[in-house]
Structure formats: C-alpha cells, structure tokens
Amino acid sequence: MTRDWSALPSVNSLWEATAEPARDFPVLSDEHKADVVIIGAGYTGLSAAHHIAKDSASPIVLEANRPGWGASGRNGGVITAKFRLSFREIDAAHGRAMAKRMYEIAHESTDMVEELVSEFGITSANLTRTGQVKAAHNQTTLKAAIDEANWMTREMGSAEVRILNKREVREETGSDIFVGGVLNPGSGGIHPLNYLRGLADGVARRGVPIFQESPVVKLRREKNGIVAETPQGAVRAKQAIIATNSYSDLTGATAHMQRTLIPFRSAMVATEQLPRNLAGKLMPTGRTYTETKRMMRWFRMVDNRVIFGGRGAFGKQDSQAAFDALRKAMVGIFPDLAEVPLAYKWSGLVAMTLDSVPHIGRIDDRTLVSLGYNGAGVAMSSLMGRYLAALVRGESPDVGLLDVRGMRPIPFYPLREPAVRMVAGWYQFLDAIGQ
Image (cartoon, rainbow, N blue to C red; front, side, top):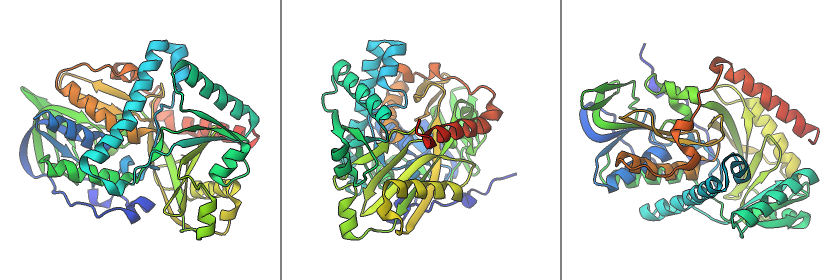
C-alpha cells in the first residue's frame, strides 16, 4: 500500500506562522547520480550537504516531507553547549580526558550554528548568544546546580558560569517562585525554522540538489555503491547518510534505526503577544531558561510572547492534555499570564538514547548515520554535518562518546512506550511532592 505523503499533518507552530516563505523544491523523478545521498533535510542533512560540497564532492538531499517539517522546525530554538549526560558524569564514568573532549565538542557545536548563520547570511534566524539560566525550584536542586557549576569552573575551566541568588533570578525571569540559579552565558536562542530554511536556501544556491516529498522507501546495495529509491525516482551514490533522527520510522528504509531510539514527545505553547508593560517585566534580558525539575520545563520570550515547553506528552499526535499541563505549569511560574490566551500549540519528537548522548559514524562500509540528540540537537546536529563530511572523506574524527559503535539497541523495544509513560509518571510524581 502506497502512503499518502501529502496527508502528513501540518504543524501549527509559532515558527511556522512567523517564518520566511519556504523555498519550493522539486520532487525527485527519474534516476540521478551523486557521491553521497543524504536522507533527511533537517539540520544534520543540510549541514552535511554543505560540508561535503565544500570538499568538491556531489551530495543530493532527499526529504520525505518538506525541509523543516520534522524536529528541525518544531523545536524550541534553544542552543546549548551540553549533553543530557553531564560532563561531571562523563568524567566519573570515562575519565577526565573524555570529559574534556566532550566539552570541546559541545562548545564547537554552538560555534557551528553561529558559523553557518554567518556563512549563509541568515539574519532572519535572529540568533542570540545571551545565555541560559537554570532556575532552581528548591534549595536541594539549587545546591546541586551550584555544585555542578563549581565543578565545571574548577575542572573544565568554565569560568563564565555564574551563580545567581533569588533576587537575581527574579529579576531575570519576572517570577518569584525560584530560590536561585546558575547562568551559562554561552547558550542562546534562534528562530529554528528560519535557520533551517536559510540553510536549505543557501545550500541549494550553491548547487546542491534538494528534493522534497521524496521519501526513501528502499535503500539497497549494489556492486559499486548504494541506491536510494523513492516512489518516483532513485539516486545512485557511493555512500548514504541517514539523517532522520526521531522520524526514522517514516519509511521502511530507515526504520531499523528507530530501534536504537526512544521517541519522546516534546510539547510547546506560545501566548498571544503580551502588553508592553508585561512583556518588559518577564524575561527582560532575552535569555533562555530551564528549571531544575526532573520533568524539565523551559521558557523564553520571543516577539513579546512567552514560549513554554516541556517533555511528557505521549502518543503519536498532539495531546490536549499535554498542552493543558503546560499552560498550568506556565501560569504557576508566571501568574500574570493566567488570562493571556494561547496563540499556538505544537509538539515534536525528541530522540533519546540509552546512554544519553548522540551517535555518529559508519554502520557499514557505505552507510553513515547521525542521530539521537536527546533534546539538545539544534547545535549538535549542525556540527555533526562537519563530522559526517570528514567520515565521507575517509577520515576518523575524534567524536568521543558519540561513536556509533557505542550505540545500543533498545531492549524489549515493543515495550518502550509504556516504559516511557511509567518513568515519566514517576518523575512527575516526584516533582509534584517537591523531591
């Protein structure tokens, strides 16, 4: 049975409503040849195409929907130099040298976003590097955040991290519920869909073919390379890159990658534009913010609107219950928003891995992959394009813990969704009782 790709649901996001017009790319037809066929036109695939083309090789990018339909157009637009696994945990488990290498990679990723925005002149991305505040909801989590910040300063040389007291966090956020926090000035924010569309336009202008509504339904080896088949055409290439992340199960050609991931739905809401006096009171510095609860919420101000997001939504489609929970949490932090209507509600899939870090590398002599960004993928996926290009050249870049050979399949894979629900429910309970 042929899937109706035009029937994939649209995204009612703030980003979609405020983005620059999308460039229209053709649908693949007939047979094409390339050095590398890239499956997925998100940050990973487009960055890889850019870096491969800079090496004078010929990539072709195939996208099942339209560029930006997946995670690259649905995320919160938060740029951070971190992994879900902390550097202190990496140090304890793998040693100081590995922790330092992972620290270097994390900071290289945020610099890569700035480099790509500058390279392609994507002013509409509205990139900022004003920092992120981790706001603590009780003294226990504040102490943990301070201990982590002090360790980072002492052991990683991260001198820019700054401890904030209750008054300073109140001035930062406009909320009185936090007891203190930690400021990391290296983080930032971006309009994620404008960034994606700017990358797609820039890569295309430099001669890289991008085809939309061209799902790869079969990926097969042949004597001298690999063939990516779509419903109306095919690409013959020497190598293939799978850059589909949490949307790998859209077709059978990449669905096997999904068995290494735990898809976790992340939901977001955005308010109507706030009155000027209220907008000036909430998050006046323009930073991004997270809280220290297990079911982490994050928030930022964009165009005089509060964007509020978090994990814990379930199922394959948007969930009204998840949006209601987000609104309740938002008003709990910002009571002044109790009567402000929501203008946008949307969600997308985060690709979690068992070891809490992304993975990149070769899965065979002709196929490469990069996925599993664990909710911090805007910067990291942008950087992975550079490393994929190095792998295509035959190099072996030092990717630390990200080496695909360390990627483990999900045990008892059919039970992943009820397991995620159970763990998330337990975390929500602990957050509710203040633990």
